[in-house]
Length: 167
Image (cartoon, rainbow, N blue to C red):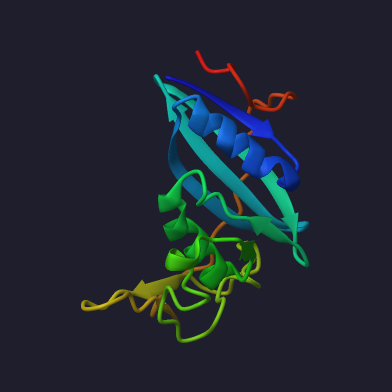
C-alpha cells in the first residue's frame, strides 16, 4: 500500500474532494487535532491501495467548508469535529447538520483548549446506550500524565492532488 501526505490551503479542500470523488476515491476518515496555529485536519482518501492524506491547517478564528456535497457520510466526522473541537464547518448538508448537538456533552467543545503536552491527566469518554452518545469527558481516576514523544517525520509532497493523479 502506498501512502502520501499532501499539504493544501483550506480554501482548496472542496475542489480537491470533488476531484477525488470524480477519480473514484473513497473517503476513509477525517482527523482533527489541535496545533499551535489552530486546527490540523487530515482527510484520507483511498483508491486501489493508494492512500492520499490531504492535510490543511485552519486558524482558530476561521472555518472549513464541508465536503458533504461530495461525500455525504462526511457529516459524521464534520459534526464530531464541530462538537468536540469547536471548529465551525460551513455548508454541511442541512438534513445532516446537527448544529452542535451531535453529541450530548457535559461541556461544549471539550477539546477546543486541549493540549496534549499540558494535559494534567488522561480523559475518559463515557458512552451511553440509547438514542445518541453521551461523550461526557471526565477525568480518569488514576491517570498519569502523557509522556511527550518525539514527532515522527512524514514524507510530504509539494503538489496538490487533483485530476488523474491516482494510479
